[in-house]
Image 1: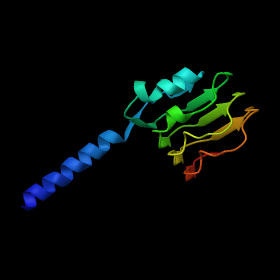
Image 2: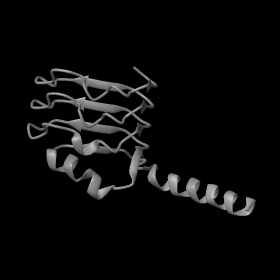
Image 3: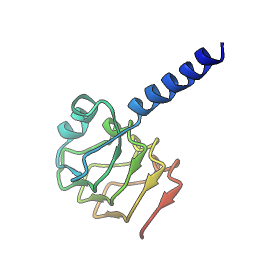
Image 4: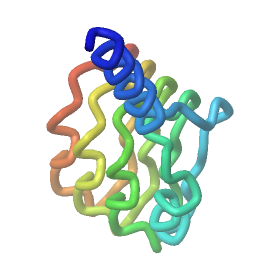
Length: 124
């Protein structure tokens, strides 16, 4: 009986690791809404990005809901030059940024709603 219990615990541990996989050690840049929307399709198991994440510079970016699977960004998070982005809903599961959080030149950004779960920022 103890063997089966231990085996079940090991299996559950291994399965849980597969649902929280790190990816993209070189980081990723999102330049348009389609790239954000396609993220869960292109990287279905990616919840921890090892590099920097840049969301920048296109009038087509109006939400970041496609990034809702992210829990950690081990590098920097840049959110810059997005004229139609009103809030950060979609980053609700993000708890950790290993380096800087940089937000500027987002003329329509009304609130930081979406960063409510953020517990740690390793830089500025």
